[in-house]
Image 1: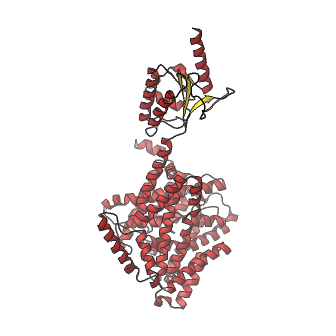
Image 2: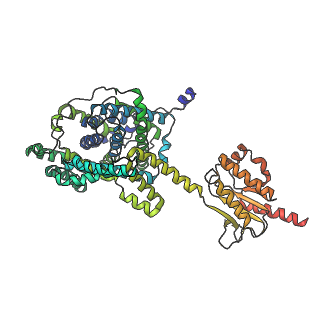
Length: 591
């Protein structure tokens, strides 16, 4: 078995993402790489802080993991990097093991990267990239929007830099605990909504200098994006505001800075040191991270491949994700994934390959070697403002409007996913989101489109019967079942056959099943189909099948139902079945 699995493995083609460029493109690619580094430095630091990890963990993700991904990815445009949704999921996965600031948290973050890498390799070996299709548009919209709202709120808290946030929260938590005891429930009292109330109560205690720095960074990035989109607004904001903080000595007035949080030098080889049993406890969080990276990342990969007319192998992308996260685990980095925002920035700059990622990795390595002293003066509020601006793209208000316009049920699914992220946390929300997708699909397929068909006036085809049409004026009933027959709709199938027989205007002599859409039949459906055939036979009604494809016939053979059906009563079209019925009736009348 192992030999057969290894024999089916499609090994990745290195350097696939570097194809399609010429020497004339190199200057533009190098320029795009420097721009990418300018985008990554503030955002990677900010996302590491979102996950409750040291800032260096974010910068290290932009060196070895970025190089590994660039050399192995089949996409020429996707940039790998920590992002807001992924950083939030990492923080949620680690909350049960160590608090932010605890050195042990970094060890568990490295172990989480190992588990994610192994999952990606398993998905690559078994070619499971198609699983990205199993989270619907509504689920992804609600989930990503929920993460965006949560991260944005956390950045506002950092911008306020209010010393009394904890005190404000304690009163809310105490009240919530009293309600919890009164209702005798086990619902946790800590969560997003409690944090929001505490945040509002802390506003009078906000540090105005910090607020000015954070709002200033937010506005600079927004204005640069609108009026000078080719200039990295995040870098401009950091340079201006860091200089301002240093000149005015704002740290003495309560404005927090990075300080010595980023050590000088390149990342060293690291190994996660945690108990082996804890790796299993990290598995649910890793599954959630991998699921989101799969869905979001492969969609972006396909969009760029279609836009520029090249083929990107989804399974090879899984290998590249796995290798990048293994590199992250061994170089002290946060879990890395896909970054749609940075990929879009590279596309806008004219990049055609993964060469900008390699240039960005070298640039950030040089910064860590020679310029970490400058990073010490970066204001935390400015980083928060930059991250807050970045996560606004995750809050998909327009997507909710579209869902409401097109299908109300999917709008409510998205809303439930959003609220689940905020109330229960991202990891539980992933499970709820997947469950909602399954329920929605099952609900729709359990009530498929079905119809009694009647012959068109010209006799050329059959159409669904109208409200005033007789179902069986001549003794022929043609019934179309518009879905595979399985446990969720099997009862409906049998009930509708009984109802058609009951309201037929004349005694039914033939019952024709239009099986064009019945490409699959499960064991429950096979049992019900057998009951239907037996019921018709008991009433002396001939059972016939029209428009059945090879798959439906194979299921009938597998379930031993073919012996219940006369082989002459399989017809390519409903017209052929009706002609056979009339011919038989004519013979009976002549006798």
